Image (cartoon, rainbow, N blue to C red; front, top):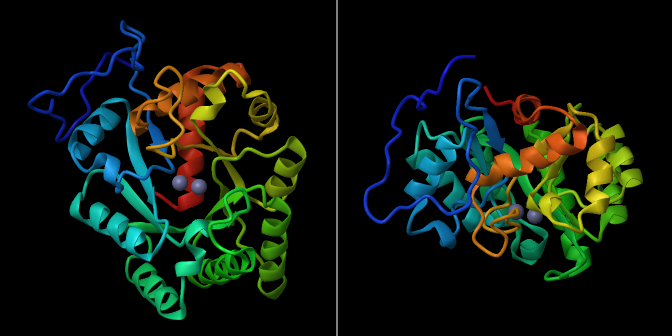
Length: 300
Ligand SMILES: [Zn+2]
Ligand SMILES: [Zn+2]
């Protein structure tokens, strides 16, 4: 396709002290230039680290080709914040998942679950496209494990009721995650595309089980780290129609920005690493992962 084009619409260089961060990803120049289209399927842009300069972050992300960004909720209040941000920025490609993270499972009571359900029903599809992030985190154990499992189960059932995919956060708890999913699925079969295991860090064998159940796998900045051997094996064996990209901003910043705040504008750095592993052009990674995220979350 033809020559360089500025993205249409409201693109503006922000005023003031904005500077392009040093060493950031740049599209190659020249005749072959093509602005690739990406989706960041997991970025906490509604959190405090972006309170001062969210508009600039969105401009830079859109300029990098990131056309849609999913804001994942972590508790009831945080989910409402994500929802309000998306609603107050129409046309910016922001979509939302609502849910209570395993860290905050102890905060989920019947009234909170009822509010979550009502808001998800009211905004289902626009902009609420998933339930999450939900799951189990036995690394930090910020909530008691039985409470985590109960919150996970209840929100999986909510996702089934609303026919929405889930964003699963699993840290050192895969066996129990699969157990809770099996328990819920025994009562009512999972949807064909049940959701994504975000920031996947497990083995090739576990990945095969999740893929068999229809789940997608999400990969983040750590795939660019030197010690990323296990993730690289999983990516190499992952079907190309089942992988989505995410930054988990503000965390997990890819090389060469590691140590600084993350941003959806770095998604192409993760895509470039996947292209290296798959042995294909980065444009194929952009096209496939974007199509995958659209299919997973029903985005148009
Ligand atoms: Zn997570
Ligand atoms: Zn997250």
